[in-house]
Image (cartoon, rainbow, N blue to C red; front, side, top):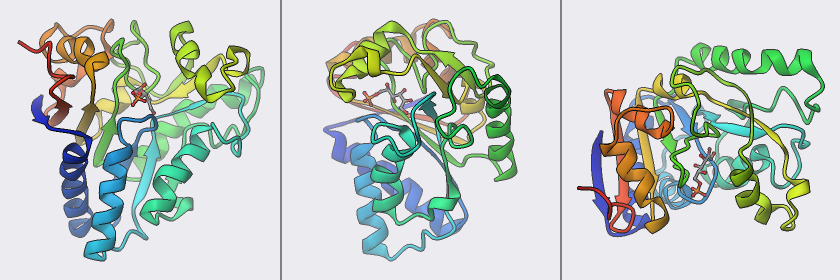
Length: 251
Ligand code: F6R
């Protein structure tokens, strides 16, 4: 992958915004791959500012999010459906009907709803294909090297599917659920590593010392399912944008 070291999140955001704004000018119905979490927030803000400044028409842009919890109603404030609405769809002025989150078809259905859940992953991958594939996929990375909800050990060939959330991830995410782990869903639906690798351009953002080990493993370790982000080494157009702290363990 191409590695770009920046001063801060705003500088990273500006690089993402330039790349996506130029894409949309050339291809007004571009397909954006979207992530939740803190890492992409400055990039979405920078893109929103560029869109306003340059008067870019966003009405035909399509979006596909990486992942979603299982069992939360869509309108729950911490569902990724709501989070993507708040952080991406509204600030960028996207058409909500053109932005998809993998749990949308489940609409809060419980895990026991086997039939619905079994087909949801394949249906999502088919929807991405039908839209023409993802042009630019933005990614964050977990301190354990996860991307999407693909925790260590996830198949590097995986498609969108249901996964059990790692205990560590549920503990980390309890802060969004009144610090009560019992409120954190136990399962999720996530784009697979194979799905992510099909996007034409991957842009992974990582900031802070907490990501340094995962970034070193991603860029300089072997390709391994134990660091799912290391699969980016197999992608022909992957850009990794990091600050000094996240780059600090690179050799
Ligand atoms: C978000 C996602 C996760 C996060 C990762 C980093 O949709 O799938 O993989 O990108 O956990 O989270 P932050 O950016 O909050 O450090």
